[in-house]
Image 1 (cartoon, rainbow, N blue to C red):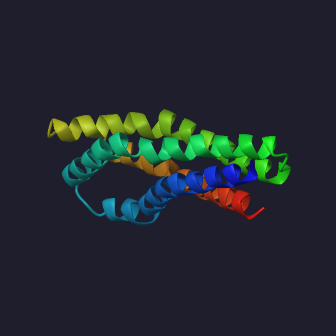
Image 2: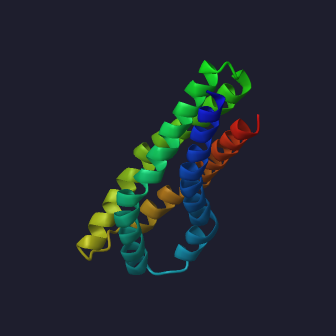
Image 3: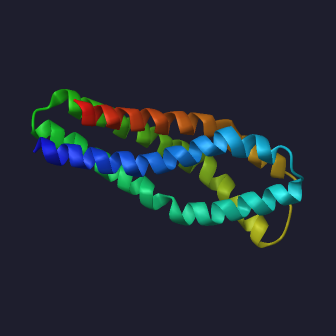
Amino acid sequence: MIEFAKLAALVAVLGTAVVYGTDAFCALVQRPALARVDDRSLVAVMGNVHLYGDRRMPVPGVVGVVAAVASAALAALAERWLAAIAASAAVALLLVWIVLYLRVSAPINRQLTAAAAADEVPPNARVLQRNWDRIITARAVLQGLATAALCLTLAI
């Protein structure tokens, strides 16, 4: 049973790491780079990034969450309590990330995507991006901690 728990944790690491890497890139590189472009470029780039990101990123995200839940459940069934706790901590961190994404990021993504599709620059484009940027570091930290907890699950 513990082998299946570790296999699930490995799959969870892979899925979660994709999202973590994306969020870390956005926090470290994309945010300061976008501060240097004009509003039209900002809307065109971010609207299109979100167009593709919101379609494709749920796959590794869902894989990561489902596999983390499976790892926690399987570790608990195997009575490997430390592994179950580590995987459960990862699940909790991922759920907080989902709440942040759904409440803050997703509505902004939709607005920027719609503006880019219409080739418009909303008057609040910078405010939208600042609000999105405001939580990207927290999102990256949550994903990083979840990835670390899942790696710990593999190690114990």
